[in-house]
Length: 90
Image 1 (cartoon, rainbow, N blue to C red):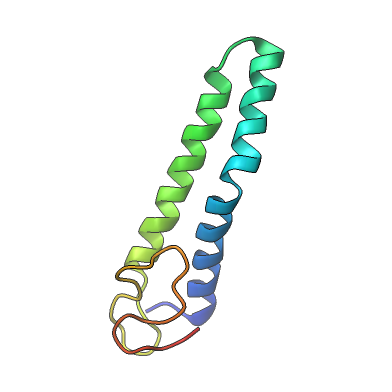
Image 2 (cartoon, helix red, strand yellow):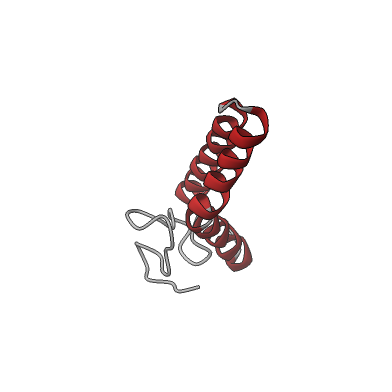
């Protein structure tokens, strides 16, 4: 079972990866295009960012509730505030 700190840490990572996608990836892609004339480094950064976001989603999907031991997330996996089964808030 996950601790409350683990649930909060994974939830914050998923939220930050989602919110910082546009302000980070697009300027990096633009800068790579201006400096090298090639879009490949920007696409690589975007692809790695998407893999990190998918990893945080998978991490949220496998977390167990600290109170009941069931999966913590069923539907709202980006920023869940309570357990889908027992209602435990963290």
